[in-house]
Length: 395
Image: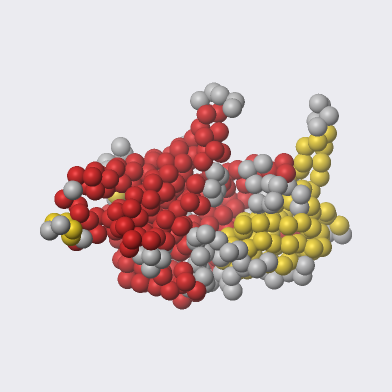
C-alpha cells in the first residue's frame, strides 16, 4: 500500500511519524496520568486542552493563513488516535471540535466567516459544536423539527437539540445548527423539508445549554441538550447555501467518520497495550498469565483487530486527502474500528479479571467508553446501510 503524501508502504512518512510520536509522548506524560481524576470529576481539563492548542492540534488540517498548521486531515487522525489510546474523552474533544465544529466552516463558510472563526477555533482557545441530532432526527434528517425563519435580515430559530459535543464548555463560542427553513411538495404529494445550516454564536439570547448528561462513559467529554427559543442571528450567519444543509452535513459526517475511526483505533490499541503489559507481569501458579495459550491467543486477536482498524482508516484517509471518493471506505473504517474497540475492551477487561472491573484501571474506562463508538457519528446499522447501498442493495 502506498499513501501518497502520507506514508511510504506501510510506514508513515517522517513528518507524520514525528507528529504521531509527539502526540503519543504528550498523551503518555500529560493526558494518561490525569485521566482517572478528570473522569471521576466529570469535567473537561481545560489546562490539557490549552496545551493541545499550544501544540497546534486543533489547527492541524487548516491553512496557516487561518491560524492552522498547514497539514491535512490524516494528520488530525493520527493525533486523535494517540489521544484516544489513553483517554477517549480527550480524543473525541479534538475529533469533534475539529471535524464537526470547525471543518464545516472551513469547507463551506464565506471568507468573512473563515476570517472571524477559524483563527480562534484553530488555536484551541475556543470550541465549536455541531447541532444536528434531535429527539426524532439524526441519521433521519427528515425528522428535524427545529425551524429558522428569515425576518427583517435575521434568522429566528426555535427548537431543541440533543447529544451535542463541546456545546456547553467554558470556551464554547459557536454551535452550528441545522434547521428547517422551508418546505416543498413532491410530485407524490409528500413534503420535502428544506434543511439549512446556521451559525449561532455563544452566548446568544434564547440559546440555552441544558444540564450535562449523566453518561455511561466519556465522562470528561462535554455533552449537552440545547434549547433555542426565538434565537436571533444575522442573515449573514447562513453557512453554505440555503437548503443545502442535508447534503452538507452528510459530507461532514463522512469526513468525521474517518477521524472517529482513528479514535476507535486508538481505543483498541490502548486496550491491547494494557493487556500485553499485564499478561507479561501478572503471575499465577508460578508463571505469567501470558504463557497460557488461551491468554496469548486472546491478545493475538486483539492485535489483529487494532491492526485491521488502523489499515481501514488509513485507506479512507488516503482517498480523502487525494480527492477521491471515500464514503464507502469511511463507513467501513468506522464500523470495523468501533467493533475492534468494543471487542478489545471486553477482552482486556477479562484478562485483568477483578482488576479490570475497577474504574481506576484504564481498561475499565475503555470498557465504559467504547460502547458509544458503535453509536456516535452513525450507528453500526447506518454504516451497514451505507456499505450495502454501495454494493447495489437498497435494504
